[in-house]
Image (cartoon, rainbow, N blue to C red):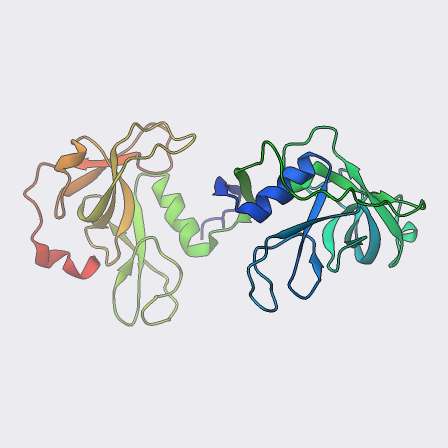
Length: 313
């Protein structure tokens, strides 16, 4: 049995979103060292502010400034900060009810150790040196034993308000494909494609998953398929992906390899994008040292009849 593989993977993308009037004012306020909440119809002040009352669903627009000082309502110690967290040294995650607010704001508290943190302790905002209109404009909270700070009465109107933000979502994880897919990847490194046959329904699945998705029984019988196959469905890609050196437009397709009962996806090359069609017969193109085909190209064979692949759409 081949060695079971594992590898560190990262999934990340920038998410661009527009801001409504409440979130725009809140983030613009942070840029200007002002903390804003929103007042509900029953007189509560919510920080962070929301556009609709979570209790009554009323639309909220009455912005009100709260103080940069407050009280810790609960906390948890973070002994090992991760990438992109507010502080690089151990700190406490805290919920802070700012003076003038009725709800608590989650952020980091810079403290020498867990013994220095307690529920009910007084804290204040430590502002970031450079502020752009994000929650990170609050660098963290810090212990505070002075008098409460009176808010300035800001109305939430700014000359240059933010209208949108870009949030960078990222997930770091270690992926282990398991026995079946490890064997599949090992075969690809030899320019072969293998699937596994279900002992019950006799279907061959590529890539193999170690179990039949139809019957739910374990699979272990390896079957070599392809290398040629048939385009079942496809899409034309018109947006260039970051870090992918492929000119647009190009075609990404589902390909039913000969002998397989499940279509896999791959890029189609060697043909103008507007000539790709269902039923097109294709074969893999390998580049030196690659662990998988770079793309699939037409074989020159006649198109496959629809009845031969209609169950794989």
